[in-house]
Length: 287
Image (cartoon, rainbow, N blue to C red; front, side):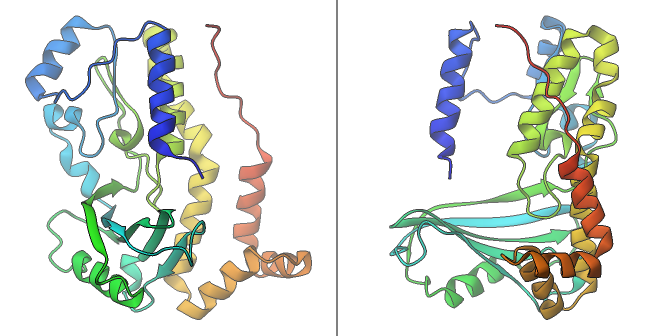
């Protein structure tokens, strides 16, 4: 388990040692971004979803075609029985179109944890979507955490598909701003790092390199995304017990059980082999 704040502070320290100027707590407006476009050769937009670029170029709605809607609390309570494990519980009674839908209990230590819920939604004006706060209240009740002290509240969306265009003039979208969050679990730090690395590599190649950025990023991601799509299809097609059996088979300690599961789900088995069996070199630069 990695403490993200410690990791990010170390990244900032390394960047400063290389001569990077870091300006903190500054909100970038559309007008500021337009000025920056004139001042800089290239800009990587990692401002999240919806991005500042989307407000400037009027494509904010693209993030809401299909996305994960999440709500989370940071709680203070007694998590010694769970720590250092993480608990994930799916909502079996929600319609298939809202799956993946689940809640998590993610202890940071024995006395503090992130507890949140997530479900899949299509369309920003979807009035039929689940009540995310009620789902969280149900999760707190099920875990006996209704009386826990709330330290922080948060929520938002995670676009679950890559945008059709990632380059606008000298603006390059990376991470959540590019829609690079997992449709299966909403995580995106891995793809944020990958897209940032490939974007810098693209910039070193000038306009020709930037023109190839999206295609190259797609090649790196396609096997992972294919496996996630298959997993989500099975989650929506199988009933709760059948999908639970699939997860148990995939994670079993028994090779025979895993092999039997692979025979029952050859599409998932083939895609998994293709993803983990294909190595792709990550660009590296001398310092």
